[in-house]
Length: 326
Image (cartoon, rainbow, N blue to C red):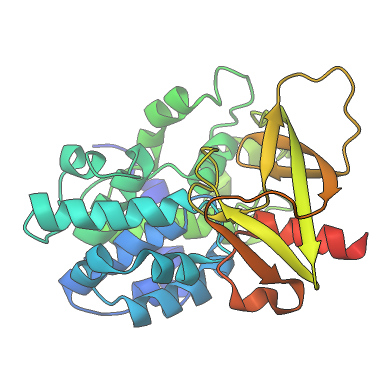
């Protein structure tokens, strides 16, 4: 039998310290599965504190998988507005439609079927199986990775690769309280084994933690590489209103409202006005102020004084704010 030291200590810590989160409410198993389904999509690349108000509003408007599968796209994006990575919202609806069509409205409780749904990769499948179905899976998010790296003192490039971390996570053990344990590990990483200034004086596993013994807590991190992209962004303005178009051209922000844009490939000279990092892109943007002498398909005029009434991606709002400042 594997050493259950970490398992017992972290579960005990969780029972005393867990946060009250809306997707952890004591509800029926069907609701718990739906809450986990929605929250895990929202929590992809987004912090818990940011997600909470969006989740509450979303669940109030869309309380079950059937409503999610049939929700109007405009309403869906409006509820998601501000969370970013809008492909998650579109995949969430598509996944719900798959569940209705292929699985008789029941969220699947096995890895392969979950992975067949749009927007669900290894991590999200593991999280849903553990949290919603109490199955012995440990989802490896940034919080859990951090615990492993410190507990085992993993520093070298090959040691911190995802494949190696997956192999090493068995040191964390398993519990018949799989749902609680998966959440306990993520919670522990978020609140105790933090990226900066880990709270070792509150940690129950320090006497077996290699980083604690060495008093060295800095993490070796795979640096995120952004790909440089260059765009000409065209601004048409009249009566304090800006012209936007529906984006059918670029893979990012698909079908959302953006300014008319063109991508330039490796320009020799490029004097950018604005820089925005989005997903894996470092977007260098040159702004051209033009007169309204061209018609665009699916165009809209938005009043910059009433930004909050429109269904706009954060990217477009950032551009408007830059234009108003300059």
